[in-house]
Length: 163
Image (cartoon, rainbow, N blue to C red):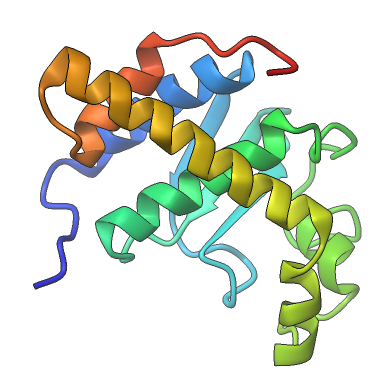
């Protein structure tokens, strides 16, 4: 059976926002909703209020949901979002537009091409590396590797910029 979130969505959102701050050194808003680009599991953009915002499909399997969060945090931490202007998605400055041009429904070939970009593999590498750290500290501090323990661990650690 696939594990899905069975606890309060606001609680997981709060944990993600705390972990995001620890990893990025800036406030990040989490929205548990379908990204504007329906083919994405998650999407980062700068909202009108100026905050970097991550929209994540809320109905994903728990481990996938968590990995999408870490992938999007990777984009922020690696500087892929430094030039984003405050916008409402979709616009020409959204990551969707930068990735696919004016189409919000990319073809399979466009998605494959996007996934092969260095920024995407960099965000994946970041997510995998940070998840390894999260598991290590979650085991040490909470005697668990579940998603909640990993997010709690990530909210307590500090990652030096450039590492």
